[in-house]
Length: 409
Image 1 (tube, rainbow, N blue to C red):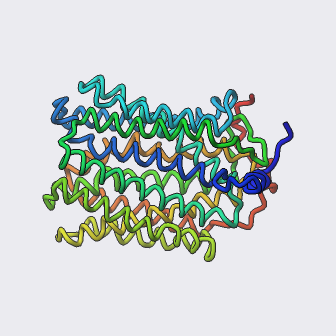
Image 2 (cartoon, rainbow, N blue to C red):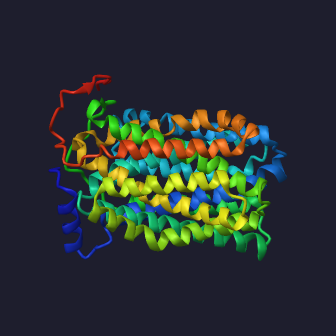
């Protein structure tokens, strides 16, 4: 069958009266599956493992480390693409994620939870890798920031809906963990099967390389991606922990902060995407890193619970500005490198996930503020590096400048 571009396929679908048969709708529904299943898994996790599996800090630490391993191994996605197309692989990943979440409540033991967590995480991290690749291939450079912002808004709406169902399930209907996990997993699985059997197979304009590629001219992108992963770990692991340990925030208060974050992202993420398209990636990244320096120093010095909450919300808001890093890569990359580079960059992003939680946990015992000063340091290095961002580089220039670490088909 002769291949057509995504734009042509979209036009053909619309001509047939199926305006929702578009790449954006596919990614929007897939994002709902990913966000709802993962948010449900995460929101109930701490209570579930303590109440029904008698977890201590040691077991939850091991579980979280196991959860990050598939992210570190995301580069292996390129080998799966030797067998499946990216769209098919995305659907398989969502099925694995949904099944992993659905059966979580059925194995309330230490090793059972380790196993279901790894299964869920494989689906989650592989989908996130392929999602990045497909987004940058299916959306052109002009529309990508805005549509990525809309997808982030949809993810926030899905997470908010998930939290509402959890509240209703436990507060009104006295549901069990087993039932709630099964509910979210099965809903995700049904939506994924709908995508598989109803949505058309979209093609891409450029056939992707089926090998691992590390290029010298992507070095700045790799570096900024690594630093982003390091900062993310400090926020995910230690910012919330600070709220509970230092200021005594309850589960309800932390959940409320999550909801505030998602409400803000729902409204602002699309606008942030449009703004990035207008001002350019360098200015957007500069503002993001200046803001993060301020936030991390604030964490180190804060003595007020209310100010800490404000910092937590602002910190999460800057996540939306990470769109600029993706669109920066889209503009400098050879279109055929996107699939391979998505896996490589996701692995680079997760290098810090292997090192920071344990090592910085020891620093935390000595002086909490040093952890956040380190975060400010990562943001400062990112700020300096971002000044070298140049989206005028032609994707076809200097193709011979590579770190020829390539694994051929």
